[in-house]
Image (tube, rainbow, N blue to C red):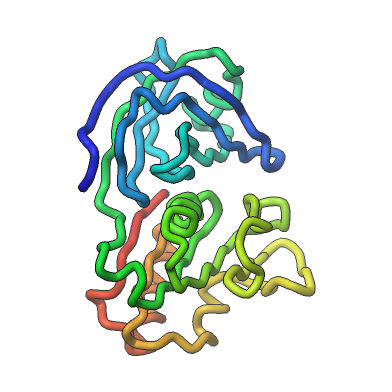
Length: 222
């Protein structure tokens, strides 16, 4: 059951730098109660009306709350949150959203998770909240340092698609190019999170693979 939406102030516990512009913000858990993996919170500086939606990166069983954030030059919230320190306070509202997995599917269906950039956040939550999942992750980024703690996933379940550099263990090219040559069973449950261009293109590819539109789920980041 999804948690009750609450609004309040949370204390920052940690800011974990993942790359030049991406970081994980860890918050105290008391403000947000029970949530379903795949949901998001709305967060922003305490003394500002600016807010931004971020998928929850941590799991419901963690004693803290984490979000994965990319600082963008024009992003008032992402820049402000990158400047907070442990002990600072931020405004939080949630949980919200319906990008979730039905209980009856978690141990019985095959999953394909397709992300660009920080769109991998809800999939991180899915994977570590539901260890019984039979999943595969395709992650589209430009450079290797944007793979966001990829070492936490089993290597055979995670494929990075890099457009800015080539690595032996990764696909050199866009995630949709890799998807087009992949064999996807029609009954696979496909979850996509990231930029809208990727999602639209991936939907077309998956339907050409024979995947039922009812098995396609998307969360658009930008």
